Image (cartoon, rainbow, N blue to C red):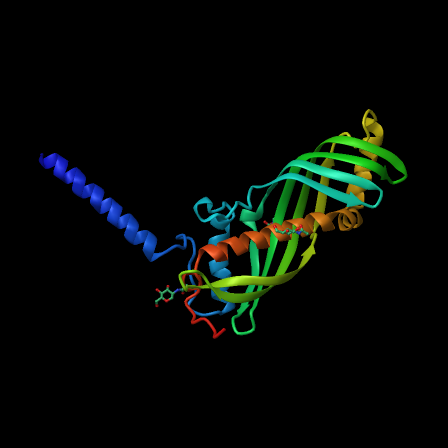
Length: 251
Ligand SMILES: *[C@@H]1O[C@H](CO)[C@@H](O)[C@H](O)[C@H]1NC(C)=O
Ligand SMILES: *[C@@H]1O[C@H](CO)[C@@H](O)[C@H](O)[C@H]1NC(C)=O
Ligand SMILES: *[C@@H]1O[C@H](CO)[C@@H](O)[C@H](O)[C@H]1NC(C)=O
């Protein structure tokens, strides 16, 4: 009898604690809101958040960014149609935060990071590459060393159905510097011709910057789109006053 009572009380206690907790705060523990918009605090808060944020927040509808899964990504290049399949992008959790700036009145948010990114997956490539007809299919791995990504977001504010303020994203611009080096490991570029496959792969690696600038843009555009989309979902889920302890400007 006594034991039973303890159990019931414990259960009620746990339920109350949970209800209380969930109504008190939606933001996960790794969000450390700043009391001002000084860069030093924003940079630290971003550093604290990235390794956890990129794992995704399934209960809030925010997908993972590391690893990030690409089911299928077609890329039309001049002369070659490349399709990237069963891809996995990793590395974002270790990005270094170079700068973060927020101008609440002007609706500007800037973030700059330096990242090592690895993209692994299967591919098919059909068309012509460097004068050769190409009909490749195999495994590929692309390693990007010390790329610098600068994202300039135009924000907005809005109220949700409960009347709570949120950050929104109106639009964005970015620059993506491929950094120190891009390594390509691609097998079977020319089916049944390993010598030619290796020679062309070597060419791609020796000319990685030109090659990457040509072929990387659609991939980067896709990646930035996914990243900003993920941030949008996060801002939709967590109210403004749980992200930043600075009064929201009139809007
Ligand atoms: C903000 O201020 C509160 C209260 O003074 C303090 O506990 C907290 O650490 C501050 N947050 C940051 C990120 O500095
Ligand atoms: C990326 O990797 C290189 C070499 O492995 C290392 O020196 C560099 O610090 C790394 N950069 C980041 C942003 O982690
Ligand atoms: C960006 O994402 C949106 C929504 O997810 C999609 O409608 C749009 O086509 C995407 N744009 C690019 C360039 O991938």
